[in-house]
Image (cartoon, rainbow, N blue to C red):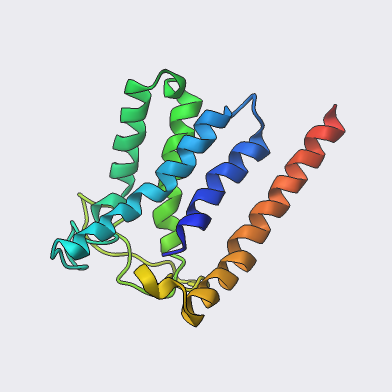
Length: 172
C-alpha cells in the first residue's frame, strides 16, 4: 500500500485543483479522510484475521462496493455531501485507494470487486514500493517507499495542481 499521506494527498490536490466553487474545502478534507479509511483493516492482523481473508487487509474495505456504501452514507447523513458532485467526489476519493494499492509491488492484491468476486487484483505495472506496516515504516525500506511516492504520486499531483491554478488565473 502507499502511505496514508499519499492516499490523502490525492483528494486534497484534486479539491484544490478543481477549486472551492466545485469542491468545498470540507468535502476535500472528508475525501482525504475517506481515502485513508480502507487501511483501517490492518486492525485485522491484531484480531487474528489472515491477510488472505475477505475480511483481512486489502479485502472488502478496498472494494468499489464499500467505497460506494461509505460515500452513500456520508451523502445520507451529511448535508454538505448530498449533492451528486460531492457524493461522487467522496466515492472517487475512496475508490482511488485500492487503485493506488494495485500499483504497488507487494502484498496479495486488492479485492476490488468484492462481494461479487474475491479475486485479488494488481495492475500490470507496479512502480510504487509497498509501504511497510507498523514500526517498520521508519527504516531504509520505508524511505524507499516515500521516495517512490514522491516521484510517482506527489510530484505529478503537485504539477497538475499548479497547472490547474495557472489555468484558472489565466481565465480570470
